[in-house]
Amino acid sequence: MTVPVRYAIRPLSWQAHLFEVKLTVRQPAKKGQLFRLPAWIPGSYMIRDFARHIVTVRAESGQRPVALTKLDKHTWQAEPVKGPLTLTCEVYAYDLSVRGAYLDGERGFFNGTSVFFIVDGYECDPCEVEVLPSPDTALDKWQVATTLTPVDVRKKTGFGVYRAESYDELVDHPVEMGRFERVTFKACGVPHEFVVSGRFRADLKRLVRDAKKICEWQIKLFGQPAPFERYLFMLFVGNGVYGGLEHRSSTALMAGRDDLPAEGAEGISDGYLQLLGLISHEYFHSWNVKRMKPAAFVPYDLSREGHTRLLWAFEGVTSYYDDLTLVRCGLIDKKRYLGLLAQNITGVVRGSGRLKQNLEDASFDAWTKYYRQDENSPNSQVSYYTKGALVALALDLTLRRDTGGQRSLDDVMRALWQKWLQDGRGLAEDEWERIASEVSGLELGSFFDRALRSTEDLDLPGLLATQGVQMWLAPAQNGGDRGSVVAERNDLPPRLSLGIRAVPDSAGVKLTHVLDGGAAQKAGLSGGDVLMALDGLRAGDLDRQLARYRPGDVVRVHAFRRDELIETELTLQSAAADTCRLLPEADGARWLDA
Image (cartoon, rainbow, N blue to C red):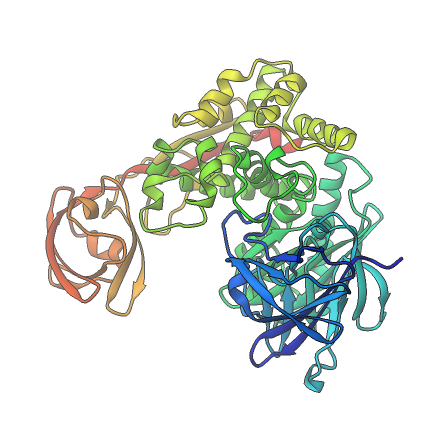
């Protein structure tokens, strides 16, 4: 059957990072066809204005040029024509992230939202896209990886024609191209594949063995069959990169090359653990946000913000299950998991923004705050990822305690999934809470009021104690102390703190954040300042330098703000008790055994 809209895309110039995209509309609108590019991509809640990467655009019909009028920042209208209309554009692609499009001599990658125009009036109609090879023979060994439905595709390379049943489906299957390594496995009988690009040496067989455990545990949590016929992990590895974005049957991932497991390596390094957690997080989204989602996202309106107060439930709950999956499927032990939990609790506690912004507001304001972080963000906002994960933990432990172990968050997630299988509808803003109460048989209104609509801290010490884990907050022992699991309680005297977050700088120490109530803020220092000297000595290892002072000592400080020298004095303070310690009993952390 001939489709009403057909796209074609090819790498036009890897040197200039340009894709060429053509789309043909068989029967354009009589009053003049409208075309527009999305302003954002699902899963990343910020207006990105992908149209800014359009370099050239032109239209023609029957080999005759057709006038295009730009109506707003991402919308064009063609003059009326009687026959098929073809739009051709060049798209600049040099966004090395999982959200956009990228092209160089090593690889190409694109999300459909970055390169494919929406054809007004045909959003819900089937379409085809032909992925073409580059005309440059230097790229003649490239292959294609995607979960788009193949129509006429070369088996060896993957170039050819693919089909989607709607624009929404078209842009939910990103495409990787280049010279990559492939490794495959099956999880609960479903074919899975990794394509790994970038320069690396690694044990990919181990990667798929470990990923298989993650995938099978999550499939079994929700119940077989999996919601897809095949699944693709597109992993780019490089230096200093990290991120992931979920799609309905694939995910785009980025990680440090050294995070991959080395041949013959034993154990799980911190970098590899982070990568496994990322894999777990994005895979869990196959259920939690790609299918089950807020009603505000059904359907997606990609022209403007889609506000919801439920991001805590879709990102925060997923962030709880990403690490929980690792211990439940046997990749890490309880102690390693509790160490990750201690770090998450510490991260939330150290931001005074948690006392100013509640979790529902954090979800709603994602568009203007979370994705637009600045030097004051820790003082003004809370993450619906990290605090959302702690709310999920608190709810899980509350359900287990108050139902005598008969119900847990697992039961809530399965009920939400069964609801989606039955009606396919998005969740109303109050529906997640209502289903949790129905599944548990508990009145959870007061729990959700505190957890979501207030800035009061959660009772994590009390809830963890019901599972055989003691929790308390202590001063950090050094600048790298982010929380830990301990064998006994040992309250050490607090170190001194400037109340900052900082990174090394060639001139000293650069302040990335100045925290509420800290010595630096009281002295008038700000994020972005470069701390050069303390009492006339060059700033460097602040833990070592401050070890010779006492609380209340006054220190003379020199710093640069932009190109201006600042001289001030600050009064040293003891570090706050903002670092989580967890002490499990011999049979503690019992919820991790479920």
